[in-house]
Length: 453
Image (cartoon, rainbow, N blue to C red; front, top):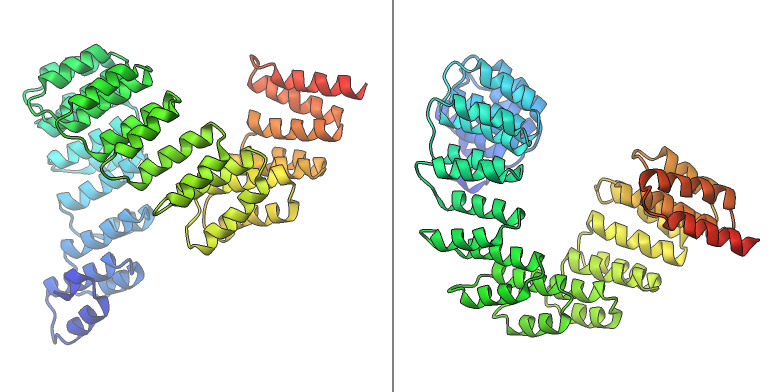
């Protein structure tokens, strides 16, 4: 009972009170520690366990694997005196999910007896990694196939945008489920075969909202709002996904007036719906409206805060974005990597060097997030705008990413601002090498050269 509810302390007291715990008791207490994330303690218990059984080993292997600690999982696996199919399948699955297909295939080959789960695990691994030919080869070698197997190879073909192969597999399936139908619908939607999508939706034995939503998104992507509206009106049931799909459609169409009417008609508004409305106005540069929408939101999340911060930064109010970031932290909202891109962009516009450096270094040190290329590019802009052009160029060359066009554009703009034409020419050349068909960098450089002369 205690192990099921996660009360590890009470479970340990109960375990310690047993004079001679059997294998089942040992397995349960190990499972309690593992589920609670106390893997060091779980490992100590399994080391102390007399006559360790497969169930206990599998518990600790799954716990390590779920947390991405594959080396520890593998170490435990190799120490096992005996293994069952669960042990092998866990190792195949976690290595395949991590993209370590060579190792997953090694475990698969070492198995003496494979079940359908083993085949599904290795098939899914290759399918999700885009290795369609190898996934197809594994599928052909399967001694037995069920609907999951067929659907797996169908989804792999859909991801590869191989519509002809999708149709061939779908037609050959002995049985189809809703996932199969939706995979073929998604493939046709990606290929913009919307007439075919409509036909498939009509043929489905059980009409699902999710299938119609895929078609609805396809219409909106093509800018065919009339058909999207007709389809939405015909839906017998409309879930939040369908409503949000229509909001996104109006946002793509830049029809803010219709977006507002639709938003007001929604029976219930999620944070995602509010964010769509906020982002539509942000894209249009409507700073005051964004502020009003944000103030009206019942429960703004990190996306909401980030959107408003970015709106301020892009419309010449970087100082307000910086203030808003401080309020976000005080509210206890956890910032995301995107939040920091918006914040650093704000610092770039207002030239707050010291605070910008502080925020940049806090991304990893205080918030545990990976610093991305976009963060480095923004920092190059902050340094350049602050007239530290040597340091800005050095950061562009020394950062752990290959600089992209945006990085060099940040440096170019700073060089033009401060009249460093020699460095500006180097930045413009780098942009041209990355984007040879985009003349804007040399136009900016030419303008600066003309102004200086």
